[in-house]
Image 1 (cartoon, rainbow, N blue to C red):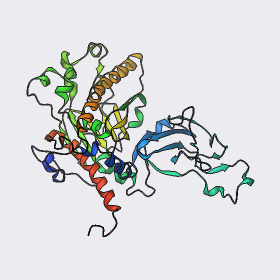
Image 2 (cartoon, rainbow, N blue to C red):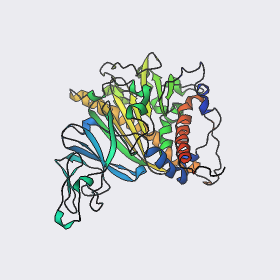
Image 3 (cartoon, one colour):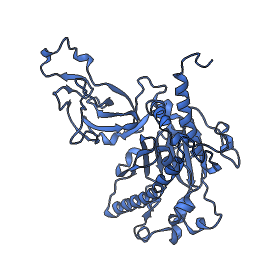
Amino acid sequence: MGKWPKPAEGSWTEHYPDLGTGPISFRDSISPEFYELEREAVFKRAWLNVARIEELPRVGSYLTKEIDAARTSVIVVRGRDQEIRAFYNICRHRGNKLVWNDFPNEEVKGTCRQFTCKYHGWRYDLKGELTFVQQPGEFFDLDSEKYGLKPVQCDVWNGFIFINFDPEPRWSLREFLGPMITALDDYPFGLMTERYEFAAQNNSNWKIFADAFQEYYHVPSLHSQQVPSAVRQPNATFECGHFQIDGPHRLVSTAGTRRWLLDPEFMYPVERATRSGLVGPWRTPDTHFSAGLNPGGIEPWGITNFQIFPNLEILIYHGWYLLYRYWPTSHNTHRFEAYNAFHPARTVRERIEHEVASVVLKEFALQDAGMLGGTQAALEYGLDEPIVDDFPLSDQEILVRHLHHEAVKWVDEYKAERSPVGVGS
């Protein structure tokens, strides 16, 4: 995707002139028409993270993923050759959904030797090839080689499984991620396999929730109980140490927040008792070295949030990480998925430390989520002619500006590609 410039002294936004510095519109988050274009331009063309390889530990391990933005379901499976593959979850005979249990719209996972359709018994191997047809003599010149499962482009980076619905993606996965993200090639995500997951259905456009994790300007007001007293003072600033943009992707780093632990007002009693909380367990493995982990050279470093377009965020802390995904379900609703990943606990105390950190972080996210309904409702006032359509953003909100800029850019490029030559000339 390309290299990034060094930010100008005293400003982040002005160093990325394509973004501008004026007020922005949020029509891309309230328009049903824009959402339909976004589905095609973004979610059917970008690489999308759907799982990690630890979720498919052995031959025949599979999971399904329901992706409303593409209006489809996908099977992801580990083959006998250890390759990870993805297929549309559709039987080639009569279009029945191939892999599901009690409820067809619920995601499932398991292990199998082959996939068998519940309806008429057609079978497919782990490579998606059709291997069995009931009463093949009843068909007319049936060529089983032509009726394997329809594949979805699939690739893996550092244990993260991505798919792409474009049969011929414009970029390989590695090209799409670019140097800012692939600088984490050596980060040992695979060591952190103890996970605490949660998901929520939210009444907002997916980008509105993503915006909450792209800036810390809101922290003193919204998270007043979770910040030290110095940050809650009038006119106190809470600034990030480093912002960076590379193609459609973004990152934000903050300084070493562990110093907050010295402020007893910052902690809940359970945090003091368990020595764990918002920034994770107080004792964690030494921060894993990676050339890409702290590109701004912040000392003391605390957190870096890598935001991979369109809908993935990986927040790396000292010795553990947090992952978010935002899956659109309509122009003003989305499914939010999150999990914390730690090194496996060796003692009961370590397990408690992990659980406390997960609960406190979940509360933090719920405070952000509590704003979503109000934001979406207000943005939609006067939907065709919004009452307010120009919103000023601070320098600390550069990544909010960038996400919406990229979504509009991808849609505009998609529209231009499909405009008949000569129309309007």
